[in-house]
Every structure is written in C-alpha cells, then in structure tokens.
Image (cartoon, rainbow, N blue to C red; front, side, top):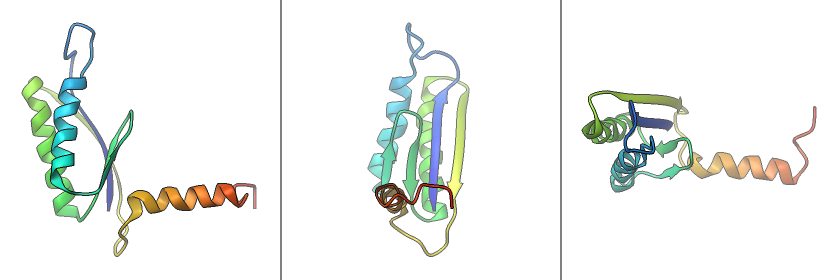
Length: 106
C-alpha cells in the first residue's frame, strides 16, 4: 500500500508562521523507518504493509506533537494487494504514457 500524509502542529511553529522544524521531525521518523518513501512540498508518501506504514504515521504524528498540544493529520491511501514498488512504478507508467502520447482522449 501507499500512504501519502501531511502532518503539522496546529498554529505557528516560529515567528514566521512556519512549521518546518516539526515537519522535519516527522520526516526524520519516516526516513529512519527504512520503508520506501518520498517527500515533496505537500506530502510524504510511504510504501509498505498496512501495519508497518501506519506505525510510522503514528510515530511521525507523535514526533510533531512535541511542538504543541494539537496536530493536524491528512491521509490518502492506495491499497492494492500484492503490488510492491508502486512508489516509483506509478510515476514510471505515467511518464511512459506521456512519452508515448497516450495522454490524448480515447
């Protein structure tokens, strides 16, 4: 399964209104988990089995909770039994379709 999530403390983290330090703590948890992952400007995506992925999401959320009494968590999951390598596989298939011109109306 793939789980894309965004986690941040509610309210500003610093004088500029940034939450980057709290988010960095969450991303550190994800990277140290050893699961395949990718972070972009909006979400961190993790690939693995249900229990291991959600254990990492929970630990990342707990890391962010150190920055305040309230945490916001947004999740999106792609649950596809028997598939692995989808963190990059989905993007590779998309890029191939674009190269081959398969992005036109059927």
